[in-house]
Length: 220
Image 1 (cartoon, rainbow, N blue to C red):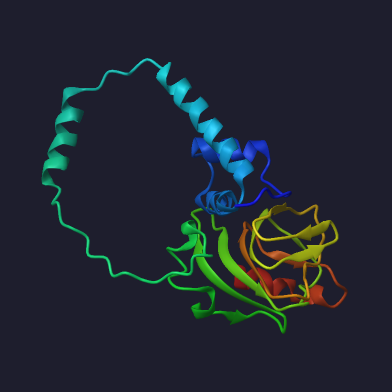
Image 2 (spheres, one colour):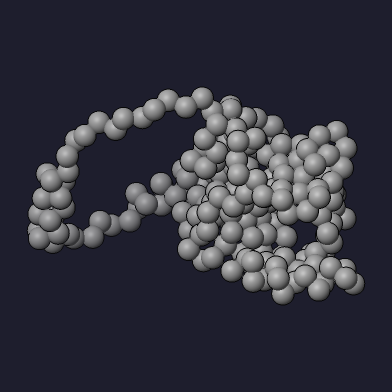
């Protein structure tokens, strides 16, 4: 675990500790925290504060019917041992992503996005946000673009740069419609990122903008 330089802001960490984030956003925060001792400690402090506040609340009365219904449901549950087939998972994969990545990144169903980039969609959130992994070849670049919704990114392997800086494993980035950037992977290795987009990207180049209607349709 490292002390990183690019972190979620305090409002995001507070919402994460309170359990009020969208699941896709929380997945990014969880992934970052596995790499970042600073944010892990911050969330622990927030959880402790929340626990102390909860203890100050007065308990609300509960009806006897509700208690009886809950106990009846518990009695009807069958205690069946779950049979789990052991799978050897790459230890570099964050624990919160192992429900999607069952062995390693190489064995995923990557789809070609461009000559430099491949992607694999992991799931969609209830608000329509797309959760995916992006794989950029060494020195590869994305087309200059902005966003029609917030984009959350966590670096899983390697590093990349854009107009605002250089980002390494574990770093957390948040981009929105005000950001126009062109991510470029470093030459020393491929870059794999977890990305959550709450809307399609918008190419800003003279000719690449012609692809934007197709991008919007493919996102939906």
